[in-house]
Length: 220
Image 1 (cartoon, rainbow, N blue to C red):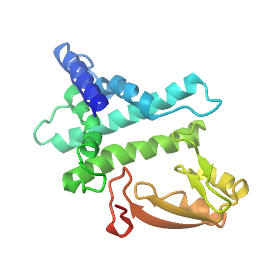
Image 2: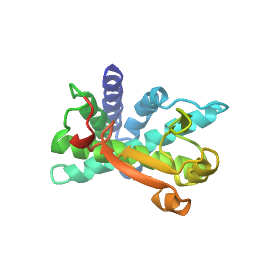
Image 3: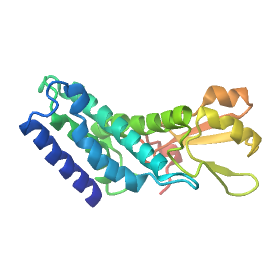
Image 4: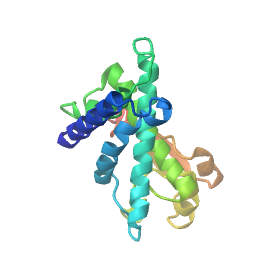
């Protein structure tokens, strides 16, 4: 929570500077999410770790790309949500980038419900940009956001980390996977690819750090 408060404070400071000196006023759609980007790159440096044989540039690119997607997404969602009250886009809309993680960290227990507001804040502001970034990085740039991709638990179980469509061949041929248990509501998985390679997927909706929660698979 301390790191998150620091990020939000830096975001507020940079937003104020943008507002006072009218930075980016001519192109607000491009410039006004920027006050959140730099603080979030610092946060992503803690959250996104390097893989083996990965260069520092690749790691920095992943962190920067994810921070940009995250902050632009939050800025524009907050703009549309607040449009009736604040019809003009301002640098302060970028402060919404911290909202989903504040909702997550504010719970006393990870089994607590988010509530309706928290549900939409986490679903739109956390799940969507994270999954979108992971898919684009892997499918377009061949970079994995979340590592390790696969951890062999025993002869029957392989624990995976957000398999993308291009990963399905590897799952089948290298790890001999025939079935997938998906416990992430925020990502349905590459279902058409699974079907093509004869992999059956069973989904259990469970909130880890996602927006959904299902009592049927709750573990206390």
